Length: 366
Ligand SMILES: CSC[C@H]1O[C@H](OP(=O)(O)O)[C@H](O)[C@@H]1O
Image 1 (tube, rainbow, N blue to C red):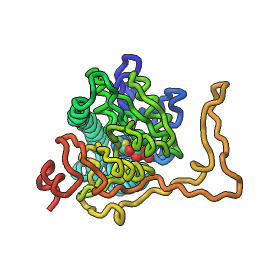
Image 2: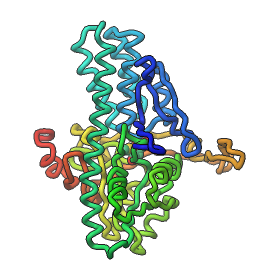
Image 3: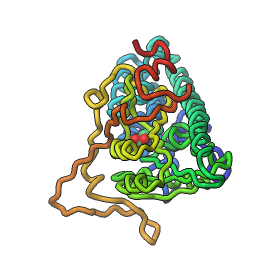
Image 4: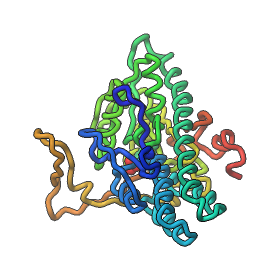
């Protein structure tokens, strides 16, 4: 995606040493665009756990490079297995993280130690290239959906899309998932407008999605998480598109906390609720999302405080609850397939069901 006309990806290798892994520090957005240079697997692990880098497909890609950094230090079998396990354990919900590490291990176990570093960087690069291509394809398939909605609107009438959290290009290697169709619709001249859920407590919507859409010129309005249902009741939402961290073999969807409530409101108001994902986000090993998908529990401090920029341009974190109050912070929830209109994948759209997934990905599930 371009920033001020310059093309960027969300992760890249420093050309000066062909080793250092570069990312944007997403905890500094939207106030400043800061590049972090990661030189060890420990730094990669910290970047993932602290959400300096986040987004299901992106943490998989960055973890893959983290393994390459680890191998640069010690390419032995024991070290490789330990580092892979450490990186895979940084966040439990996004299946892309486990998928990327398992793909790297499958490749590297068959390679001599002396060749592992080069092969690891090469394979991580393929993971990145494939993610960017898959998300571009998701954009094209999702664009068809937006065109269909546009046909039922008066000429020039806004197409109002609600999204939750950030599933844009900064959450992936490039393009994004939920936002890819929106970028393409905007670029094609369709009159899209996006309701951006702020997405407490980390405010990925208010801070990241708003920054992405604003940088690209896409009209958008930031709303509190609890406003979405009201807007749907009053006919102000034509479509909901969200990303996901894990989809089960029967179409249950794990995504940022609050997604389930949007799906309920969309269902109650007869509004299409679509989930955009690359196939690397499908966990073919689980069927019942509510019972089988681990939900990350993050620090209560993310709930009891809020971080923003002061008038002087300094980042500041302030407490918003009494000292003695407890806080709970589940980072994801699971939307049952019955509330999902459909899935937008790199191979096209399908119903959120085993049958729908089997049609697009034959042989992936029995
Ligand atoms: C294409 S990103 C999918 C997913 O990842 C985000 O979670 P987090 O910000 O905690 O990494 C969010 O759930 C997005 O929808």
